[in-house]
Image (cartoon, rainbow, N blue to C red):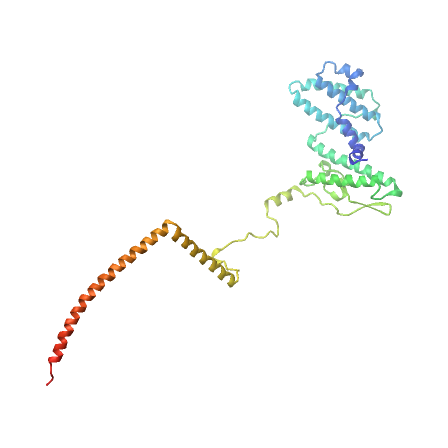
Length: 340
């Protein structure tokens, strides 16, 4: 039997699937109550009436947990009422009155113990939906545990019922954990959609979703095997405040930076940089207009320097002749002078 097959045969799941099955063709054909009371109702209203009748009859004709199934039936009908109100906002009250008449007729023909009395519930549908989902899980969990425990001589992880129990609990532990990131504070269990009983509450995940051990033909549970869902006030703090032990951001201060490279590596980087500069200069000098401009400047400087040198040579030659003349005169003077 596949996982889907065994889940569809669990008590809560089985009735929910039946509730949501909208095939009411057999109800319309030969039911005097439906045809009499719903005669002048809109087709959509008639369909809900026949659907409700089908679901009510299932409870009456089967040996099931009547109290739980009546809770499911009342919740289902309240959901359909909200949908009907959205579809027929202007005539909802008048049309829904046909459903109320149908229910009164059904219950007037029932023995007291087989009725699903209408109860006013002040909780909103979202609250009731969350409560019912958890309640259905725990009902199915306990049913599977009883099946596993009933086979006393074969209680083991290999037993199909025990294997289904572990699979079912593990699967829905993941589903509920992902669906509820956090839970509101647990102020009042009687007014909390996440508390069905002490063994069925999202405030104790290890107790509600046990990790089973099958040994010595007995079923036991690991303690504190599951991670609890965090409370919403604590979850909000985690979103606002930085995590504990989170490293401070690294501050980079260029003025205080120090080289972590060895000296030889720094020298290598320097040589590579110098070679890069020389290579870039060589390329600029030989293959670009900048090189042509530099070469022109150098040639002009050489020409200008050569002219300066020639002028200086000319000046020096003139000065030299004067010096020679003066030297000749001085020489003649010294030759003519004779000390007494």
